[in-house]
Structure formats: structure tokens, C-alpha cells
Amino acid sequence: MLMLKPLTHEAIGEEYNKELSVQDYSKKTVIDGVKIITLNMFVDDGGSLAEIVRFDDNGNLQILPDFKVKQSTYSQMLPGTIKAFHLHYNQEDVWFIMPYDRLLIGLFDARKDSPTYNQTMRFVLGAGRAQALYIPRGVAHGLANPWQNPANMIYFVNQCFDPNEPDERRLPWDILGEDFWQIRKG
Image (cartoon, rainbow, N blue to C red):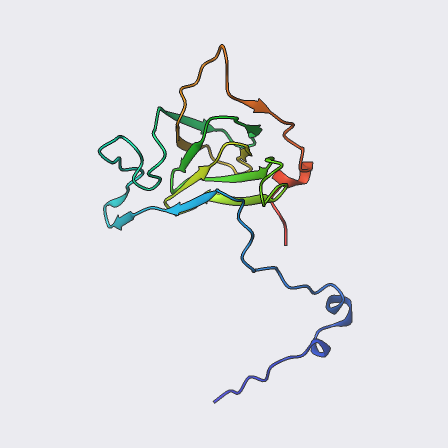
């Protein structure tokens, strides 16, 4: 039987040893009020089915009982697209990225009285998972598709869009730095 002995840093070549690091796998701080909600996804040999939303008897989302959907929208993002950043004074969003697509999501808390003011979040939605993302008003949000295929999303909002008085305030796409939207290497 072959017995493998553990290594120490001395066993790694000096030119590589000085470059070694450990990736941070700790749980990241979530912006106050933001929710990533795992949805049911059923997979069988014929495909998959994901339940996006259920409504209660009052028309509110069961996963967010105080959220009353006023409008639902479909969006497709082509490869290389960045749509960021914007925030709302009144509107709240619930996003659903198709499970077999993937989009890079970026959020930051612009609410000056929030306990997580200036906190950022950066993560991927889709990528084989069925999840809903709840974004409260005042949290700046954006998304990017740095990959090779188009990606699709459906989102629900609690305000109807009014092009004459849009509840949408825009911020520069690179307000967190141009590298925020780049795929991290390593």
C-alpha cells in the first residue's frame, strides 16, 4: 500500500513558494435587506423545471409576502454586455436568471443610514441553480455577461415603469472600478 506523506511549504520550490496564497472561502457579508432565495428545481432525464414564483391570495409573492408584483419583464444580455449601475427610490426588484445561463451580479448599498452602507456584493446567478434575488430600494444594482453566450432573465417589480417619470437613478458602470466586472483569475 502506498503511503502518501503530507508536504510542508519547504517542499515547494522557492520561486513558487513566495507566490502561494489561500483563496478566501469565508461567508461574505450580505447587504441589509438583500435576499438570495433558493427555489425548487426538479431535474429528470427529460429536462428540468424550476418554479419561479407563487402568489398568495392577495397577489403577493409567497417567498416575500410584502412584495406585490406590479410588472414582470424579460431581458436578454448579449456576451460582453454590462448594465450597471442604477437604483430606485421606491421600486424593489426580484430577479430570476435562467438556471442554465449565468450572469455576474453586482450590488452596493447606497443608503447612507443602512448598517451595510457602502458594502458591495459580487456573485453569479444561474450557473445550474434556481434562485431568486430580492433587491431593496436604495441598493445599487447591475449585471454583466462576460461569457460567450447570451443570458436570459425574468424580473418582477413592485412599481410599473413610467417612462415620463422613471424611478431609476443611474450611476457610472465603473463606480466600483473597471475591474469589478472582470472575471477574476486565479
